[in-house]
Length: 69
Image 1 (cartoon, rainbow, N blue to C red):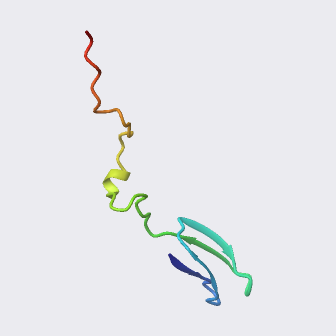
Image 2 (cartoon, helix red, strand yellow):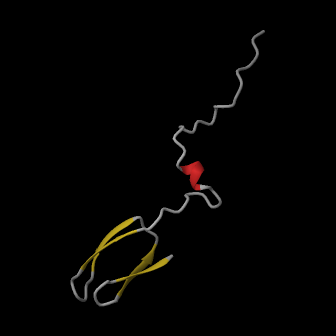
């Protein structure tokens, strides 16, 4: 988790993980617009290549059809 502080008066506004966040400081009334520098993988250990893959993921892609009798 990351500390979220006001860009003007440096008051601590919270802690957390975010992609984009708009938060108004209660002390100085400055609107703080924050965005993450890079997205973190959803699963620990997942590569960015696997996340950004253009092919849709389908769990039955490699499954073979049963043999007909």
